[in-house]
Image (cartoon, rainbow, N blue to C red):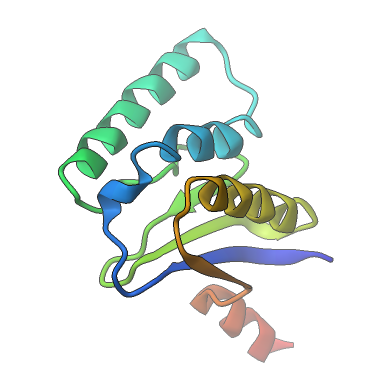
Length: 128
């Protein structure tokens, strides 16, 4: 199945600090899809640490959205949600989202999963 985006909705009582143990694994899963040179890998390490600092403060992480990345990981404002997307439909979105769900489940984080709920997807769907 080809999807635009994978959405992980955290439960109402969710606190961002509960991602502290699972986030590095999630980060690696999303970032590993992008081929990188040494300089880009160093940038990713700094960005991961910035995200971890926010999580440790129980704040929403920044996400992964660097220029040229194959996939992006976004935390929309005002919602307890994680979105994984690519700028076009992709068969890998579902696989990556399921892998992230497994990581979260192994760390006992409660959530639900859905696909293709981004506004961009809805606009493109209406145009057809």
